[in-house]
Image (cartoon, rainbow, N blue to C red; front, side):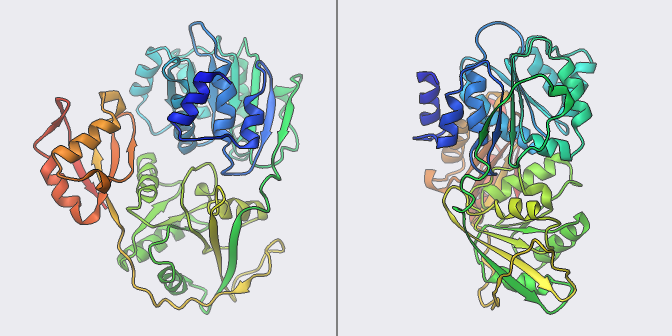
Length: 436
């Protein structure tokens, strides 16, 4: 790893020391092909991004390609890779639900690295807007999930376009039993950290009995025992997620909703508001169980029992990350069939004695972003000088290509939006909208 990369990791990512897994992968001499097996939340993205960026070298054309199974993962991976690659290399992101024209403009800027979902990548290739002839390093991130989601044919097609490939990196949170035929003939080294930290997560896992097959009343009582905590409520079906979300919202709970039936921008918004403490509760399907980087989740609730042990592991893996403590609760009624893999749990009897705590923050939506030459610093200055906020009152800022989500105190949300409305940022007209 170059001194420049070490400095970027320390200064831009705030990471003082790599984990043993990240350090081992970072020392890989490229070109090389390897498989990285490591649990959810262990820092795999940074681990593979270091050798990826270090392998690029000089020359025109796309030199590094990362394929992810989901849009959310593409966004998260591209941000980490972009930070490591700047200022030497450019990064572009290609994924469904995103403006195709914006992506074409990004490709016109001659990126060195592309992070993409399989279908969208193939779309650009078929339209003649992208050549992969110069790609030297391919990363198939969360490869096992890509197979589970049926992306094998797409990945086989993409692989055929990689005429000058030198290195292939596969990552997975679970052990890979077999590799697909299109990778035959390539030798892989294995970094197996799949068991690393399996006993370290400090999760207090309890059973909560529900007297009714409809567990909503039990859920609400349990949530009142977790006032102000960041909680993910997992269900097995989208319609159940919708019903639970509406019920919680009408009851005054600061809840958000996340499932695969929502449009991409709504899923992105739900994650942004959950991450910045505008909503403390996220009702979600197993789509949120892996591939998302959400800090500070204090509790997991299995409203529906997971379909298998792997799903339970990934759900519980949303909490107790990076050495933190966490709690998990399984709401179980007499109508539930307890799976064989499910552990015997100590009973927890929720009291529901606490009042619902309103969310600390509200969110302002800015319709400008990085591609409009707006930085986080510009937004902070705008909020201080035109919105009359102090630096300490400004919460998390999530800056995308053409928009930003900014957390501000909930009790100042409306007045701040009104105060900002007459003004421009760096001579750019901006529309600021309140989100709750």
